[in-house]
Length: 344
Image 1 (cartoon, rainbow, N blue to C red):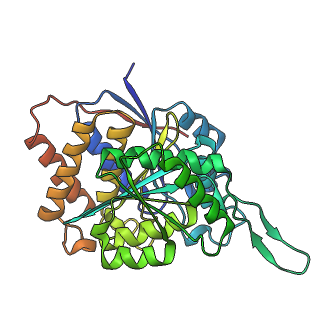
Image 2: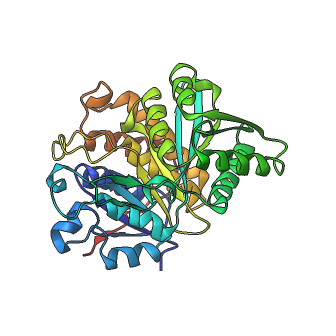
Image 3: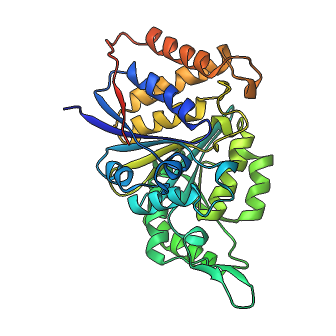
């Protein structure tokens, strides 16, 4: 029996390509891991009509962690079933309510903590008789408190600075958000807390991103602000995320999409996927030293073997080769290849 059970969901577009890179890198690490591939997203729709088949969900529930590539693409845009609802359902089923999205480059080092299973994306929606379409934004105080507590704990381990982002000058849900965070702040007197509106925060992220440490916000705002932060620190091809609940498994995935325009060309940048693997090593396997090794190897390879999106000519495979070589050169551990078994 392996010590660690990882379910991989390659998904669509470049997802299988960057997932293959992650599996290769994991194989050279001193980790006793059983890696299981499962269908998800458009691939699963084509096979069985469901983006999240029951067997895939069951495998994810029984895993220590879930590594996810990307889902979606124009191939499924016009169909009755789309890949994206499968992702939303997986997040809700695993209750991974705290989405951590680091962004670092130069003097910028911040983490956005995004509430992931509530708000506008999960509220009641529909079409009224007169043709009006609606999506409902709602939050319960307990939903806000649990993700805010995760953000406070993270800030306490970092630079002890927390910026809570809302739209309290307009939205009642944001006024609730601000009240709950303010009340919780009394339990963390060592953390400096400030409240900011989402529009001014977006501007400040572009102009002065180095002013941020931990940014806490709700689902929709976090989706947008994390992309802004990624753009400021190198682009979506470099941005990773960890979606965590109160137990295992967490979901670890790159922020970028399926990039169907370059799928199959062999030039996808696997850096975000590999950084997501590093987050998996840190949060799910509790091996922060291995996570740092992977991060350093990725940073080194971005300089020595960059892919076209970051100004280079390396293929996905060549970039992965560079990461593997950097890890082997930087470690004296004996490694063994791990099998990746794909099942339907």
